[in-house]
Image 1: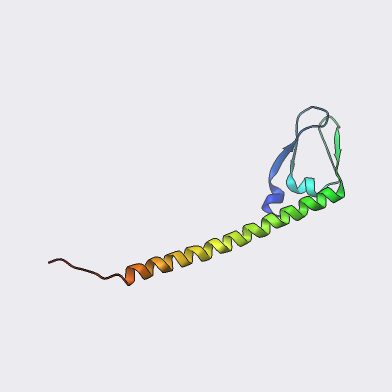
Image 2: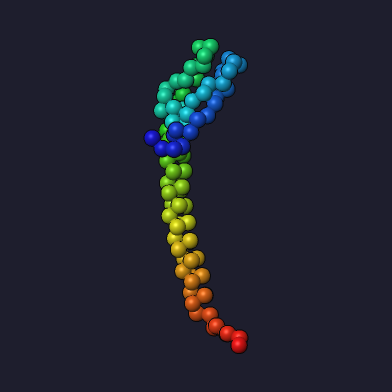
Length: 93
């Protein structure tokens, strides 16, 4: 299970009671969620599929972002070292 799927969230109780405490993964996978008072949400499988796809896309973008950030940092430090090493040095006496 991904970090996003494990992230806790609250859904308003359909009967107006206390919110239902759950995770995004539960909303994406369970067919229904029940409040403490017995009120239920029955989820549409098509909507859940779209949520799972959106979660997967977010996770893929996060991985890509982390890789791109690593590459950009390497390029930055390489360019920085190049500027320092290729600079003309003038020493005063």
